[in-house]
Length: 583
Figure 1 (tube, rainbow, N blue to C red):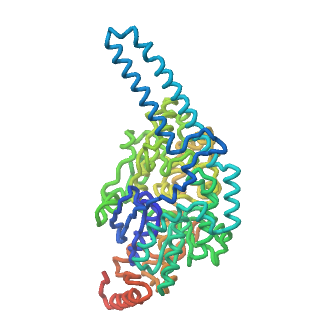
Figure 2 (figure 1 turned 120 degrees about the vertical axis):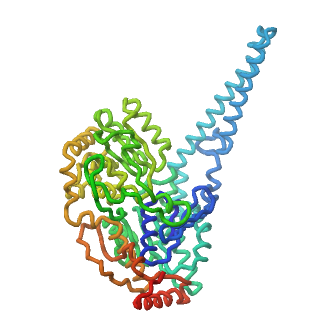
């Protein structure tokens, strides 16, 4: 499996690797080291390896040039910080000299005269440096938005090189190939599961090299997002056209595709002319059963009980064991205090500003934001705004917990908020937090993004409000807090939560792997057909995580192409039928 992040913050990737290993596959998950140092650990039965990814291609020479045509007085990008710091040092030196002269009483009459010229020159120099730095900043912003010359360059490369234009527009994509490619080749996999659009190219090129060496390799593309609807990760007019071209070039190489919703599956098939519609694998939580009341009075998942840590040192394996922390204790509030929770990435388009603005009109309500980096600049802005509203003590910014603890952790809240703005990817899927809130049995407060709003109205599990409308958000929060049991009753609908579990989704992936490698995915005595859901709840096929414990053989070991892995699997299957446990 390939992913372009550090694994630990990506619940979908972690669950995919863990469940595939539990189903009997030999899994190696390659991710990107966040600190540039190699690392490895065990994630259940899967091996995680983080690779350093140097990114010199992500900084092409054009980014180091000053915008001569639009801002001829601008500094070079590397020069501006040096000049600004140098003039600050000059002015500080003059302040120190003035203090020294003032300390010598004999020179007091001459102090102002002696330093008047140098001080005036330093002030003038600082203004000149600031002006040229502003010229650079404005030129850089204009270049990111796209100058006429930039737009001509983008259009020209797209016309001349078509899908291959990304090599010119965004060569930094090849940095991942140089970091991952040789490692993948050395592993000699039977199947590559490429997560999202950056890793699609890495997996496709590895497949080509393996075929040239006589080793057939199957490629599964896991499309987490609809790329045309993604907000560019960098402010550069080249970013989106380059990544779209990269995806178009390598999508046909995939032997199978999976994605997060039925709507996105249809879009991907149409955009890339896929032979069949991608299978839907929801990013749902692992199954949780309820045992007793929480501090809020509604059922708590059984996983709130302490559990043993996974084997292996470091990383996620250690972090998700042990007792689940208390959300209310971390917020410093008791059981009777109304608490609305948000869990996920923090960005303006996620609508967190609406939640903070609403605190002024919800004087009894506390808000908890569970985010990956509580100290991020955007969250500091939200805290400052809460302070201006006199609600600083009611806004709680907390760090992520391990993905296996998310559901019981959130279960102490009174409601779960999804205040997304209207962006394409927000409209077409049921996102991770939707399922996490549902398994925590929280009433939902959801903005009117299409798919989640429609599902919430259909099930009756929450209230829908107009995106970016603070007053309507306040109305929705008051409604769910006034009658929470009315909304929690929706989760008693037979089969609703069962179809929204990772175990159901893992069966789909397991069958895809088995089909591509022409191996049987034997039925288990505990297999039951799941009830059909809507287009966002495709429950086809798959494997349960407890299959390995019942004797499922480890599949895919050995080098593909020499047949050893599959023969070993068949031999272990014969042993299993005779009563041996193939572990």
